[in-house]
Length: 116
Image (cartoon, rainbow, N blue to C red):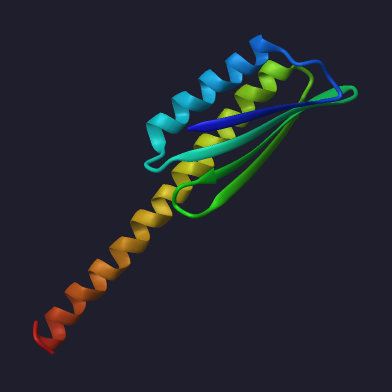
């Protein structure tokens, strides 16, 4: 997994970068099957803090997630929860997509015969 971090209107923080990288790597390694490129942007929008992530996944799609919160670490945790939900939903759609074709083939063989 390749990650790029950007800090907008704030100073670069290694602890924030390491925290976000650890959380994202944990989820991606658990759920993703293809390589992922992530662009993570931390910014201040007073009085809130914003975390924005743009994921390019190996399946050919991309996801953008943005979270505003009073605390940057809490925003990262919320972002991870959103990412987890979106990635699971995308994987289920892909699995369901394959199952539709498998069911159609079984239906065809059942009513039309295997060689028609």
